[in-house]
Image 1 (spheres, rainbow, N blue to C red):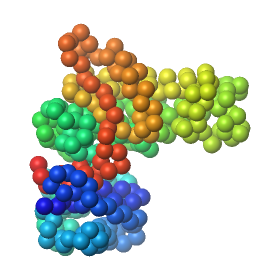
Image 2 (cartoon, helix red, strand yellow; image 1 turned 180 degrees about the vertical axis):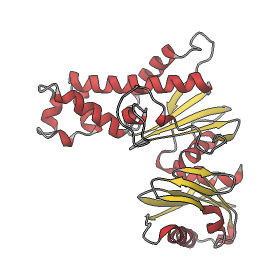
Image 3 (cartoon, rainbow, N blue to C red; image 1 turned 180 degrees about the horizontal axis):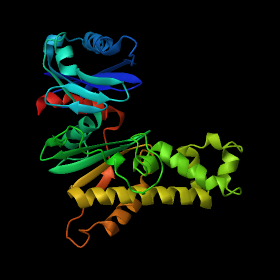
Length: 316
């Protein structure tokens, strides 16, 4: 038995064949194009599936179901994209449109929820009943799984922890609010913190590494400077951990999940951060005097989380 997972992104569409043992067997990707609108996008995904099975040597009739992980507000019961700002799609039923061209059932979910499901089933959530997954990239994606089910809220937009305010009157967020977690712990937020600190300090190694051009600041440069003993870079990283720990402590206080898995730019290369983060979160949560504490750990599925999670949608 085979399943197909599609990770529909604003830049690329990645699809993969997953077998009954949850192994990713084959992947294929194309550029995302909205030139022909929603209908054209669906045609592209159907063709991607057709090409994918040919390359792997099977037929679509051997595929049990196809799952699509899509950014935005997704009604996972009907398959409707209520709103996807990355794709500029409103009130369009993805499941119905795709099912017209495919011989197997089609399922849809928010991309972060799909990643959370994948981590819960075959990743870092093994053996637990509840977990939250955060992906720290250009934005902050998050998903909740409780008792084996994605928790999406009654309006299909629950679990958007990136838009939880941690600094009243803080940085302007793309959602329209100020001080959202995303504006501090995304890649953009991390770099903005570095730039703000650098402007008031001219003697940091950071200035040398960017050759005097502050627009060249990146997360890797900050960590390089920190590893070389730069105090300013260390302050940037320390501030980042503080912001993230506040957000995670809020999540723990609200939901008490057994685990929180974190993926993204920082934790792919700086494993030591997890211990520092765990210590700061444990000190802040209301239940810190209890025998059990929420375990914070790195997500394990990496860039394949969306594909694998999407492939599981029809198996739940």
